[in-house]
Image 1 (cartoon, rainbow, N blue to C red):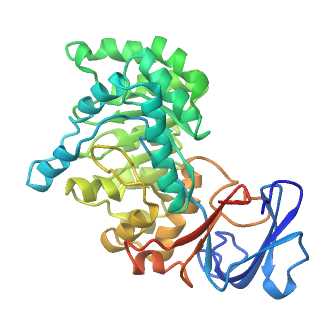
Image 2 (cartoon, rainbow, N blue to C red):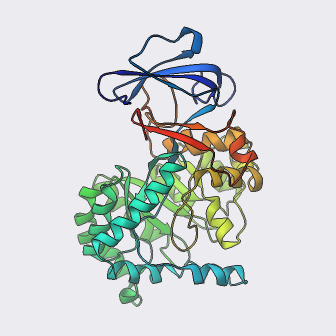
Image 3 (cartoon, helix red, strand yellow):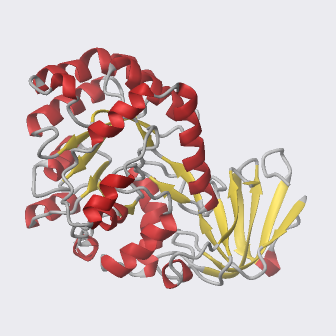
Length: 392
């Protein structure tokens, strides 16, 4: 069964369809007793089941809920090694500082391409089975020209949303010369990485890169043709959010510690605030105040931040449940943030919605409504996934 061979595929018997379009009820654009038609990987028709046109093939949703595929716009999947001991120490009371990144850098540098590739394949497969049809993948665990390049090459085998994060932390060999490392990132490393990346990102945080260093890297990335992303305001207040807005970044991620000026800056921009509740769960840190952002009119995305140190989850349903339970979001707001919000964070208008012209990325739940994603946390509710119109 395929929706990409010129044949049409009808998905009908949909009890609740989340369209994320204005042609439905409420903020999710809900339709009931719905159907959609896919041709060549795109949605060409959405409407009531009883009005559905004839199609070459049919997939009966059996009264279940159908949602757009999750868009995970922040993930660090190219790495080797394990930091379970670090997690155990945090659970015993040790605070999170971000310093463990260097542990993963050492393991990643020592790993073969095949080991790194197998790790990415495993995590992408996990995510896909849980409804994630688009995932952004960052470099950032190589921190040499050769290792950042190979990490991006491997990432590009799995997604078109690749991000150069050479400015993740200052590696040990540059500990006494962080500005020298920024020179390398902005020069030879960026030149080698840019052909394999769509985005450039910086960890703008105490213990990583300050505002001036962050600005240098982002401006160099923009000059190389890359879009801008930024890690900001995770460990405490800082300049990251307002710098992201000033430079027109597509997204600023974490946004845990915000003041009124940060919220106002985001509300007056098209920079998406991407929240990563898996990181707060895994570090026992305060959760971002999503309600404050939403009430101010900020566009919010949810993503996993999947990485071996501070958020080793590939599960967007888990992040949706955390956002509802811990961050003041309604189930509808969390689902929208995990789909349409993620698409906005990647500046993609073909993802995160189920409407004519959109890419046919969707999931069928073993549930009658999207509410069950938060209502039944930890339960594997994704029955089937279609990506580019192809049932997987």
